[in-house]
Image (cartoon, rainbow, N blue to C red; front, side, top):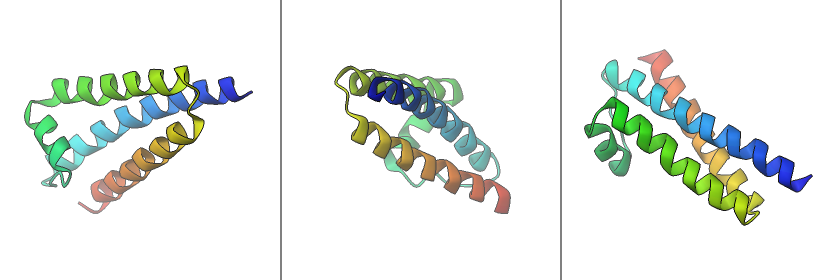
Length: 95
């Protein structure tokens, strides 16, 4: 059961990260600003590279967390990125 939960969370985490970068770019296109200095740098390299970065790094991290069965960490980072997605969505709606 725990393995299945880890795999589901892994997929959700990767999809949430892809959604996060797409929402971020939508907010930026409407005049928003990236507050996270690391992501601001990543965004400066362009849309496609930032998309690859935002999917590849979480995919690697997810692989390692699933491999070592770190459910609590994977759950936490999924919640944190989900909150970022909600923040970006709100920014998109009010922009």
